[in-house]
Image (cartoon, rainbow, N blue to C red):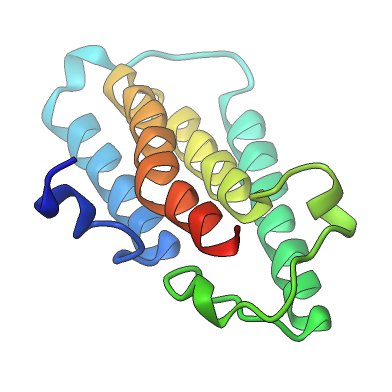
Length: 139
């Protein structure tokens, strides 16, 4: 992997990245209206996904705080303990799952084909530039 690609590791806070993806999704939806679609229950589905994602992010953050470890994902070397209880029993990265669910809710709200395509991009970026370096650091 090139040095420029490695330079992206742990650099962007995941919340900022999620917000950037949300903005890009909105821009794509407004610039290419031909790919918009409608679906029954769109608003309810969007709210449910975003609400579930938000709840998971908040629960994960609360477990980190209770364990007295850092919630800053750009500095995994500051981790004082590995949390394996609560939502962390279900996922090693519940905050990132939560962000993905919020983005999925946003994509459903936008009801746009291009917006949906950003979701795998978020997962790929997070796996390569956030989760893999975190795992290396924690090992």
